[in-house]
Length: 106
Image 1 (cartoon, rainbow, N blue to C red):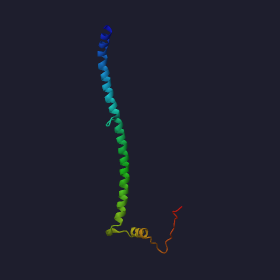
Image 2 (cartoon, rainbow, N blue to C red):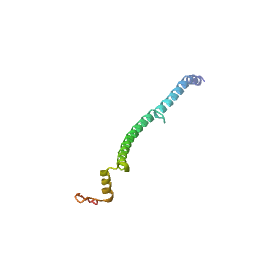
Image 3 (cartoon, one colour):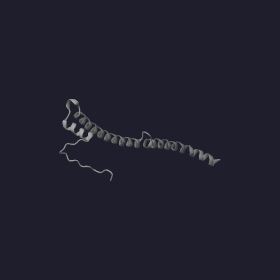
Image 4 (cartoon, rainbow, N blue to C red):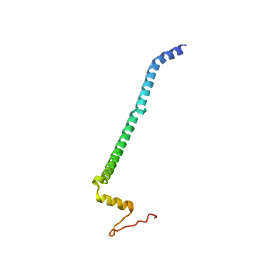
């Protein structure tokens, strides 16, 4: 029985530190790899940067469309813009215009 008693005595000194190491390892793992961990933070910042770039592109496009719509407003219609839209939508051309036809079947 001396061997078993000695193993129990040594186990008492090993179990506490072992459980501490396991507990600390658990929290360190989840601090790095968890849903709200360091890696998730890095991924979220990357997605945020991509979203900000996309937002800038969409805001630029929106401003461009707002300028075009403002030019077509009845109170301040631009004759050149009206002429461009009529030619595009109805296929009109003046007698002195040169028209280039592109064959799109190739």
